[in-house]
Length: 158
Image 1 (cartoon, rainbow, N blue to C red):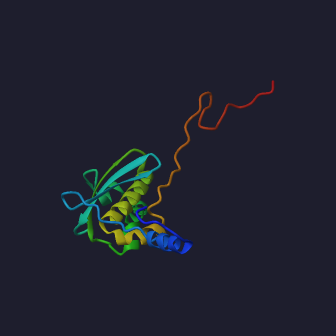
Image 2 (cartoon, rainbow, N blue to C red):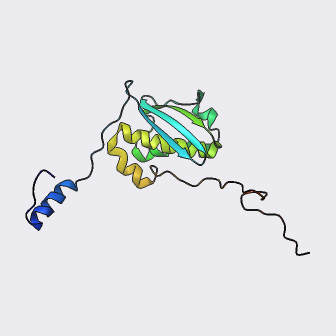
Image 3 (cartoon, rainbow, N blue to C red):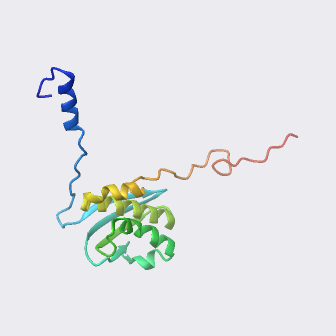
């Protein structure tokens, strides 16, 4: 600390000035895009976001082709609905691992993080909606000597 504190009042003033909310700043690459990774179950999604007409490309395929089920498309578009930014950004996404449901959750997490990097003011709304929290639940591993993670063989007394 650069300044010396002589009383409790000085201490209160010093902590009040430090307790202001942290300012988040825009994180962009040299092409003007924001980048973030999202994770869910065993799926990992890398998301690049930039202003545009709302075109979404996942692993080189169109959004409607990759996520054919409407529920999965709804999950991916949730952050834009909360932030009132529907159709304002182009997304380029690569997904790997897990199934389609896990990949949709990973994309939602990645889109939310990328939105906060592009527009830091949206962080409060997305955090309140719970999109910035990484869901840590994963599949339990199979144990040695068991048929599945917890299922064992039938017990026989005789």
